Amino acid sequence: MRIWLLRHGEAEAQARSDPDRRLTARGRDDVQRVAERLAGRPLQAIFASPYVRAQQSAALVREALGFAGAVNTLSWVTPESSPRQALDRLADYQGGEWLLVTHNPFVGQLASLLLHGHVQEPLPMGTAYLAELEGELPLAGGMTLRALHRPE
Image 1 (cartoon, rainbow, N blue to C red):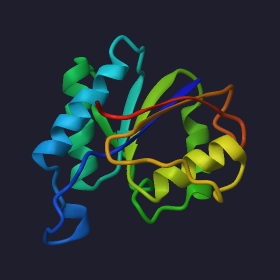
Image 2 (tube, rainbow, N blue to C red):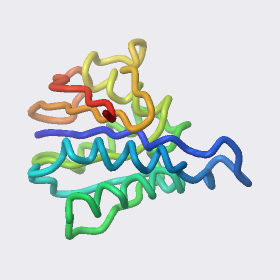
Image 3 (cartoon, one colour):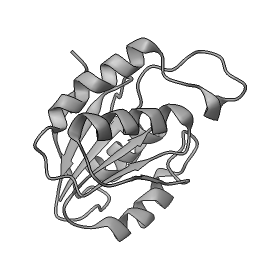
């Protein structure tokens, strides 16, 4: 299976609340550029945090790819979410290829858990970074990092 982890694009510094922060123009451009890395991939699903910036990022990827499915919102992939609890839930999504659009520090810690079996070495995930992980199952230490794409 292949898991694509995307940290949302650059967001505005201030908003009514953290979940309400929207993408900046640069954030939108960066997400659109990195979405090109997913062109031609057989994605089966796109999942995203309920936060506005993640939803906007997922929508941009969906549009860039012409992905026919909906963006599925997961309440358990926010900045404060537990990577260990998320790993238990990821077992429901075995096989195929899918994209998860989320936030730091969660995304770096989740990648570390999938790659190393622990969260002590978070994968450095700047805004609009896209990590490509591959493995048989989404298990702690069971995935391999194939690439880390940056918006260019």
